[in-house]
Image 1 (cartoon, rainbow over the protein chains, first blue to last red):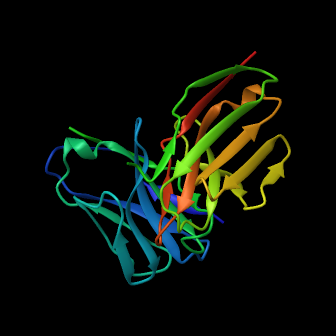
Image 2: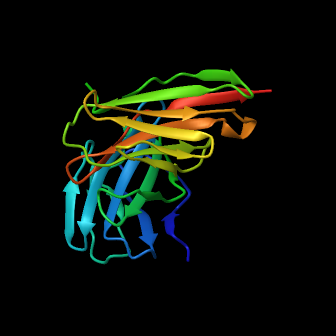
Image 3: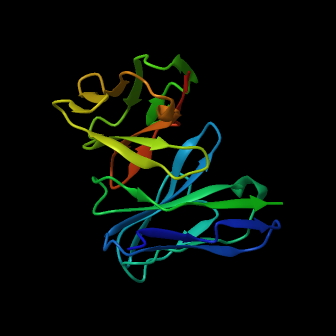
Length: 112
Length: 108
């Protein structure tokens, strides 16, 4: 089992470009979430999903979109990249919002 | 005020020392509590869950104080391999919020 996978591992974008960060899990978890991690700020929740077809906003949703068409996949879209979105992005999954979360290896994004 | 707050440290301790981390949370309706460990440039990994009665796993002890809304992590007999950042996590309204993390360095 691969667990939680994220692609790409690294990405450099120019301001204004769009892209999609991929997250996939084979753990049959209903709950999936996206975090960004910045120095001194810890992990901040961007968006989350309690199941296929259901998504909701977290602490810092502006500039990001998500969709959840299947249990396995939860892509994060940057609509128009800005330097403030330079960060490390982690996808996480769990049985529910009350259970421990399992994290993917992260995507390091730089926006120039 | 952040929902989950931790002392950022850093904590620099010698091998064999006992070190304690605290974490406070603001949502009194929070139901689940965790400590995660994060190594440099890696993803967070669960260290232990925190139960109301307190729980121990080897050299690690976690405690929850609901009345004062804080959780703690005690590491006894520190090892060099304990050097990492420790994140507390608290569940809320359909989400999990993390503290900013406390950096621990254990020195020979």
